[in-house]
Length: 205
Image 1 (tube, rainbow, N blue to C red):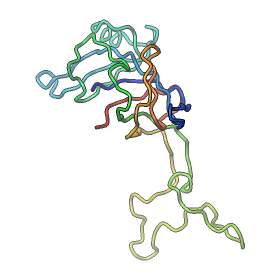
Image 2 (image 1 turned 30 degrees about the horizontal axis):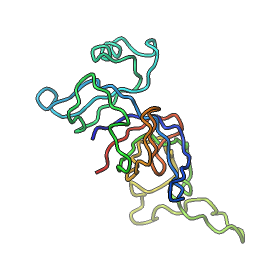
Image 3 (image 1 turned 45 degrees about the vertical axis):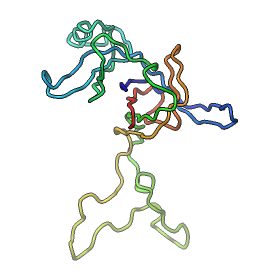
């Protein structure tokens, strides 16, 4: 089953025929033209290269435009390779939501929301200190090392720092509904990234 690139539109809910409510994320998936096919003989690995998100020509370099023109594709902002997902695809084919099925389990990868510099309570779910009786350790992380032995702080100790803004893969999401006419895919649960972010949808199994 091929992979596909999608744009996260947001979350909503769907009422099923039995009255249950499904919390779903709406993805505008494809259409994604196949730009290249990587093989063991020529490249040393197997992969399919897909393009997504049409832009103006002035937004791309001449090298990028030449690569897209060679595949017969319009100017596209996102070009992503998927390992071992080529199947029977060839250059010039188009991957759409019709390549997926309702009830299929997928995994979605994207860049999570950046939350800036955060403390240990928000970043690592540390417990807060007592808030009464003159406590001065309400949101401080507390001691992180010994005084005599080993007289240093071990590497990898959880502390404050930059939170979010990294690649995240959410697994075990089920496709609830497909709308081929509008290129929409509804998956149960939440996916990484803010609204408008580009995510990768692959089969999880």
